[in-house]
Amino acid sequence: MAEMYGFKCEYCDGIVEKKITTEEFRHKETLVILKNVPVGICNKCKNRSYSAEVLEKLGKALLNRAT
Image (cartoon, rainbow, N blue to C red):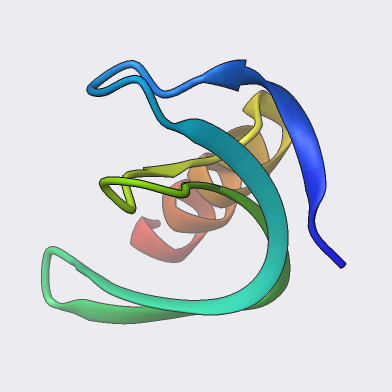
């Protein structure tokens, strides 16, 4: 069951719910796959939000890969 993140979406008046999911996206020339990542997803517009902790880990991983 989804747990409420406790805030409204920044783009609409929907409620952001926490879900665990697999996310795929491209960063420059690299396909990035995140598994078992908590993501905030708006129940109306489906905008995605990531915690600062997830974004920090992702940033470090991408920087290490670039060097």
